[in-house]
Amino acid sequence: MVQYARSLSGSLGISKDVLVRTDETRAMYVMGAYLYVLVGKYLYKVDSAWNKTLLGEIGTTTGNAWILGDGLSLCIVDGVNGYYFNC
Image (cartoon, rainbow, N blue to C red; front, side):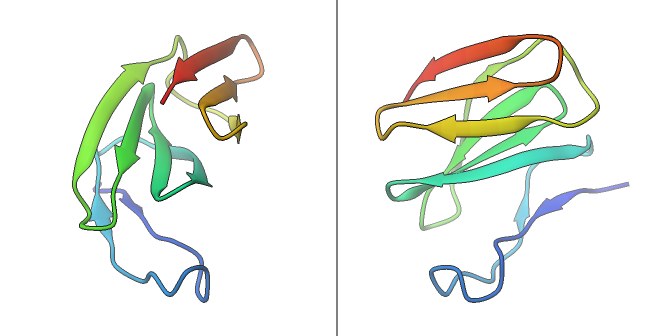
């Protein structure tokens, strides 16, 4: 099964689908000009041209996850551990 990350309707006027991976899309977060998407254990940064960059991975592959940013970095919590990424 192919998973797509889709922005919310009306949020920044974005409605394009982004093929990321076949894993579960666990969390999405907008910070600055980028959409950050956690798919399975992989964190991606997606730009306005829908180019994706793999930033890294976390230790779990399924389940709820949350992303919070401060403008410079992201904190990801998966219910088991917390992870810090410089963006």
